[in-house]
Image (cartoon, rainbow, N blue to C red; front, side, top):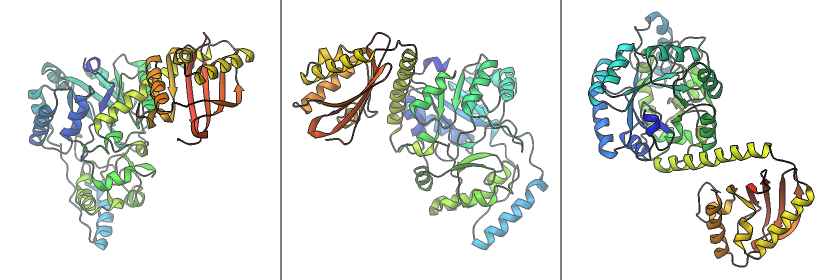
Length: 474
């Protein structure tokens, strides 16, 4: 199974409609994750070229995602009033619109291409193909992943023979992957949906929806997912094809909302004028309305007019960072490891015995004495082997950009570097707060800065977690 072969539990979301590029997929694949290419809105020939280019750039695991076409075109009467409303509005502003039309997005040609290519994974959105399609892809060497948004869709995908379920929460950016778009579409948050599907299906799960930090990735792994499919967090990467107007919007704290105004299918994006004005009137008519607004959105992107662009984004878009994809993956992995270790340590602390105040006070005295002697062996004797230590100095000294180190060897290396940088370092205690199994030490340190350090003890009386905070950095 591909999930077992990944070095990191990170799957690049397909990101159809612009952000998806061969360079982005290859970058994620090269880190040991799974790099998805979006087939949506491409011809089979264009998809073939992107697969070729991605393979040229990376020998890692890559995949392709297809949109499952609707069974029939929307009834014209359902969308004509909306199109007429848009036409009047656009005419007054001299804005371009297209004509509504149905398309299967080059479905058969893309399927035939993927049967020839034999990619490690082929995934589907907007539905679940018939079993014979899934069987044919498996015979060609591909695992089949189905994106689901409800327990009912998960049951259907499992019955059809899916190998993996991609579980999309309501927080996710872009189109809802629902098999059928309808007015009463259920919207499950990611963690509840993972729990519901996990309780009824043995299939491996990949979580999708506003996962932008290691803490969020750790949360879905703890909830039963084998990996996270992450999209918005990669959209500011230089390898992504995200437009400049979209990048600017992602950097803001703007709210997101669900709308059918741009495409006739429910999708989450950053709220703007077009969404606010037309969402309430927009019917269910995909892809017909996608083609109607496509010229408008294209011109708006070219002219940098954010109020008229479909700014697809997950709810945590403000956490995205403009870093190379490899650095985004490294950051997520490092943060996830810290979060998981903290969760384990928290569990240990929850079961820890209460430590007497006199013992905590004696520990603090020994700690200060060892520190002021610059005796790293004595200092480290108070710490557990898997200590999780956080401090802004860790990032400032270039040890780790996350500001956290894990384990005694890493902590020794950091403190050794700190003592070289500040050879006259001494701590002057000014206050202490004692809890049942923790101490908050308040002291003056180098160059008179004020520090507060929280140390938390495990069952054996060793420090399992410590976090230092300063009023400034020297």
